[in-house]
Length: 247
Image (cartoon, rainbow, N blue to C red):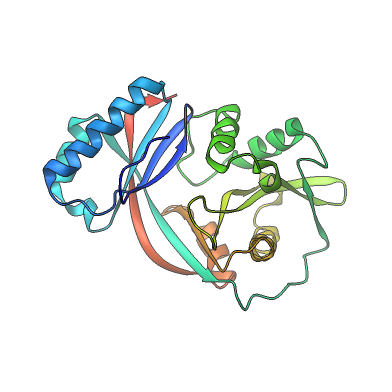
């Protein structure tokens, strides 16, 4: 596993590697060393998709941007990060009885099929990785209990989307959704807000004290879902992707 002291790494080797927080960088030389070590690790492990995420202040540092370009990174998108305290969250009435089934109650193939359908028409900059690679990377990142996070939402007998609640690796109480999305025909009908609120409640049930979620700056519907769920935006970040690793 790739580690840099003080940095936050989402390691789905060999499918993806994301440096979500570069940590305390003492100098431009220090940042160059971080990028060099990261790229060496990528080469050694044949990683397919590689990204570095900068906060607003870091993304204004021209020396950082010049280094990223020099190492082959290009700007991908701006993401808005939202947060909500879950300690006082109470169970909400589920919209017309959304039923949640784990992958263990269905099949891995069905889960991946619904996940794939939920990515269609996304307003976020979607990954070029296949669902198979996303799935394998998720298993690497979340560890052996990953199946508990792979949930399909049903209305009656019909799957309407997926939600993937988990405690963020390396933390004790930070709840996240590895992925959250609806099949296109169920969007813009109130299902998204209902499933999102239910997902936050599921996070609380597994021990999360707070929730952090993110979406692309162009995804207005998801931003509204965050707001409807009582989340507040606390940060925006910019993602840079390594150009020759976008398969």
